Image 1: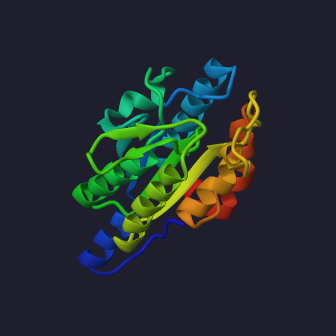
Image 2 (image 1 turned 180 degrees about the vertical axis):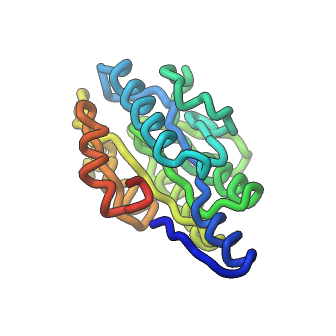
Image 3 (image 1 turned 30 degrees about the vertical axis):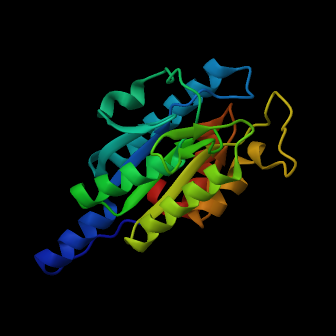
Length: 212
């Protein structure tokens, strides 16, 4: 939670850094979901709610699909998706981590509706598969661990909605985004339904006071 601190300039600068946020937004094609327009609208609504709550502490935005890139802050208003398959959380966290170092932020907030389904291979190219390969999950976990070692906290708000198409993974993981992101971030996540998402986030947010 945010604190009001008094003391030296160094102490106040440290508190300010702890408050600053890099927001990471999923723009991948929502595979397995027939209501793509609603899913994209869910991301936009959640991103706008976060922008309003975070205010001046929102330093930068990263968007990702097959690859990740830095975006302008108006990206929270965007109701579109990248027309390329793949959700490359590995690259998204890598770019977000670099941005945190640049702007002296200590927190990453991910808004996602897809399981990791793309990652870099040894050649440097991006591999995509659906159902996702275990390699995509592992690559995202490695990126998340690098962020943690750098002193960064990764929070996540994820879509909590059953897939319209059957989950083809034997372990059933691809449709359980809260479980996936808990494993990757090693923190509780906020799971928000497609409808009434903001009300759900408001109910859950006090457990992570950063959003209240």
